[in-house]
Amino acid sequence: MSAGGDLVARAMTMVDLSVIVVNWNTVQFLLECLRSITPEAIRHPTEILVVDNGSTDGSPEAVATEFPNVTLIQSGSNLGFARANNLALRRSSGRYVCLINPDVVVSEGCLNRMRTYMDEHLSIGILGPKILNCDSTLQLTCWKFPSVWNSLCRALALDAMFPRSALFGDWLMRSWAHDTVKRVDILSGCFWMIRRETLDEVGLLGEEFFLYGEDMDYCKRSWQKGWEIVYLPDATAVHYGGASSSLLPVRFEVERVKAALQYWRKHHGRAAHAAYSAISLLHQVRRILQGAVRYVFNPSEKNKFLMDIHAGVACSLFLFRTFASWRSGSLRELQ
Image (cartoon, rainbow, N blue to C red):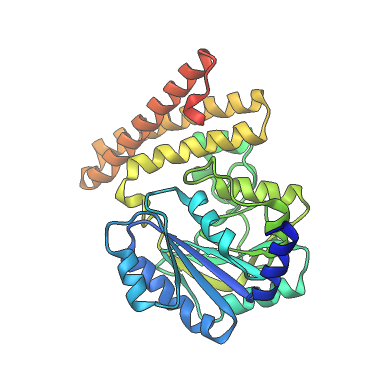
């Protein structure tokens, strides 16, 4: 079928909203997420697509049994977040598409409020709700684009020491109360509503990102195309956080560092990229030393601090290997 024929076919079958959930071994979270989405989805033309990334915990079987109307896509292996979402994005037909993490519980009315706001504000490409922790406290999901300065502040823990400072802690936008509608640089990819026209113009998620970083990259690309990214506090959801990453915490910490380097390589010059790489190593060294001190003076939480030390060491070794590959003229570590 031609490209024009694809567009005609999609227009004829388009629903109001496509909800996409990518899962890897988080069956209980996934089922709770789908239960929170289903009541609102029944009232509006909505399709729900679940991509299972080779889970071994019975996730596909549980979804097929409890939610027979959900489109289940089994990737057969862990493709990562971006590639798995893209599998479903290619099959989706909604005017709007929601990407929702499996450890998110959507509050009643959230999807409808977001859809209505998008209908009324045609310049918005991506909309995000207020995200709460499981204890109902605010989860910081709005960020400024990373810079050498705010990365250095994080590496030196200045953002933690001065959390309300616009100068030292503003990367996570802690100085803002998160109680008003606001255009932001980046929204955490745990819950997005994306306009179909934005997807058509910006394209799919960057598959060079296995996990993490794809949200920063996509927000950057969206702003470059002129689409606004907006935070809507009147719509809420709960995000447990780390459901998949808790299964292999050290590996996922390395993936986070790798994704950040990929983002800087893609969107910044060589000098800024090199500066960020050095700052990232400084961050890990500070993390190791801080974890060691806390381990000595707070033995009751020694397992937590040992994990921080192990993650810091693993990330530092990854950075050293990356530096070595640069010196030899190879960037294989970042492919």
